[in-house]
Each structure stands twice: as C-alpha cells, then as structure tokens.
Length: 346
Image (tube, rainbow, N blue to C red):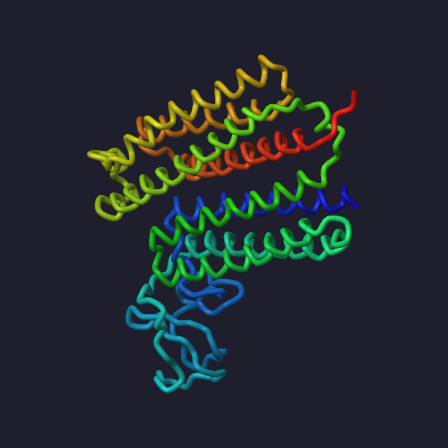
C-alpha cells in the first residue's frame, strides 16, 4: 500500500512542478492574459487559434458564455442563439471582470497548457486523497494532509482566477507562487512519511543539522521573495521600454536587486557549511549535493541574465530551480527529523 501511495505522491509532485514551470513560462512570455476569462478560455473549453474565431459572424450559432471581441471590448453571449445579418445587442453583455480585450494565439495556448497541467495536477492529488482514506485508522495525518492538498489545489485554482481578473496584479502572483510551494511541501511530507525506514536508519541524528537546514530553508524563501520583487521591477521595465530593450531592463535597478544578488553569496556559504558538516561527520544526507548543484545553477542563471541580458528561457529556469531548491531542502529537513525519531538498532 505504501508503495502505491508513494508513486501517486511522486506523480502529483511532478505534475505540480510542471505547473510551476508552466507558470514561469507564462510569465516570461507575457501570456498571463492569454485567456482573459476563467476557467474557460474566451468561453471555450478548447481555445481559439485565430482572431477570426472571436469576431462576430452573421448566420452563426453561439452558445451561452462564448466570447467575442467587438470594438476593443469583450462581449459574452447571454444565451444559445443564431445570429442574423446584423448585430443584436440584446444577445450580448459586456465582460465586467476587466477591460483587457486582446488576442494572441501563442499567449492563449501557453496559458491554456498551464491551466491544463493545473487540472491534471488537481486530478492526481484527488486520486491521492481518495487512496489516502485507507490510512485513516493507521495514521490519520496522511489522509488529513492529502485532503488539505486537494483543498490547496482548489485554492490555487481560485488564486489563478483572481490573478487573471486583477490583470496580473504582482502581489497575487507572488501569493500564487508561495501557495504552490506549500502544496509541494505537503506532498513531500506525504511521500517521505510513507517511505521505508531502511534508508533512514543509515542517517545519523544531528539536532544542530535540523536547525541549520531549517534556517537555510527560511533563507531560500526570503531569497525567492526578493526575486519576485526584482521580477516585478523587470516586468515594469519591459512595459516601459519594450521587449527588445533587454540591455536596459536592469539599468538603475531597485535596492531589492542588489540585496537579492548579494544574498545569494550568503545562501551559497550557508549551504556549503551544511554540506561540509554532513560530509565531515558522515551523517549520510546525500541529497545535500543536489542542494549545492541547484544553488550553483541558480547563481549561474542569475549571472547570465544580468550580463547577457536575459537570454531566452533563463527567467523561467531561474524560478524553477528556486522551487526545486526549496523542495530538496524541505525533504532534507524531513529526513533529519525522521532520523531523530527513528529507533536505532545497536
């Protein structure tokens, strides 16, 4: 039973991380408003591929909720009907959530794929929660957390809707990101708590290590928060200077940029010391090597973005690496805690 549950948890984690990656791509490409409504896209389950599909047509059947772009505004069909030769306002009402009425096929499909991955992740977590009911008598925390993940995914979906309706308000985007990390943390706990104790018995107890790992995780979260503020500054500069002026995006940056850049040195040194302690005392926490690799990759992509003016895909990669770093650090904490609780054989 544990094996099946862990596989479901792993699938859920992979899908959630794919959603995080897709969300980063959405932001990099400016596709957040590719679908101006929610949960459908221009009123369709399968989004349009051409602007002609969103133009009013005579002798055409429309279904309730379908959207057209008319005079730079979104109009929503109020019922199922067939148009005549002239436009009849009585069948339409303005979309009131916002006034964004542009269509870009690439942006629409990037955002649609992001939503599709979110739906798949939600379905996977629901299956996981249903399977977790078997643990109710044995370990209640497993089904409780499993269903919290499902509610977290629902809350994420609602946050996604508010992000769209707010026309990508920065604070809501940041909350959306941190909620995704909370879901990752719960899934990692579920996967780790149902793992075999054989591997844990190879790990040595170290209370100071737990404190260091926890502090390092908090530092990573602060770094991610600073990064979101820098990202918002860059987005504002893109709106002001345009997509082609990449060499000007980070001219005269905000204070948070310098803090974020310098803080990365502290992050590297702190985790380097943790790795040194693990290897010197032979504590056995091998995943620390992935922490170091991810930090080096983070620093490298940051340097590349600054000095080479944001090469393609470096922004989503930078964010994705940060979320991966959070996951590995959190899992290391869980391992260290379990090693303390696990009875040792003589």
